[in-house]
Image (cartoon, helix red, strand yellow):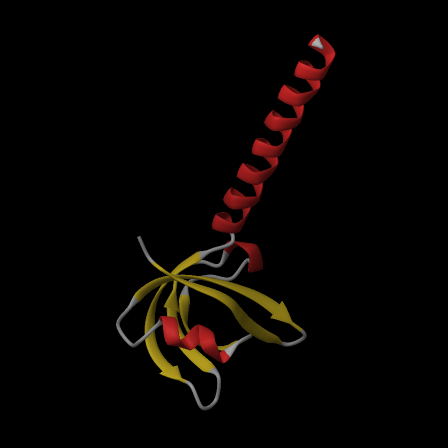
Length: 101
């Protein structure tokens, strides 16, 4: 019975650590920005962003494509947001938008 409790406790700790690592890794890939323009028809968003660390990109204002047009419903010009962007071929594509805290 002691072996079972030890295995159960070890599994619970490992799962918690794994979940925490995933949450913090996702948060680390998020970048602060201010929305300058939203173009739903073209599925694009213009952002004035801080350095994008996962892409080694300095802060600037630029236009991004969005993976899903529904993401654009989460933002309007002037909003402070956090966003996640990936490089897809030669394009930079926003995959997540969250309100800044």
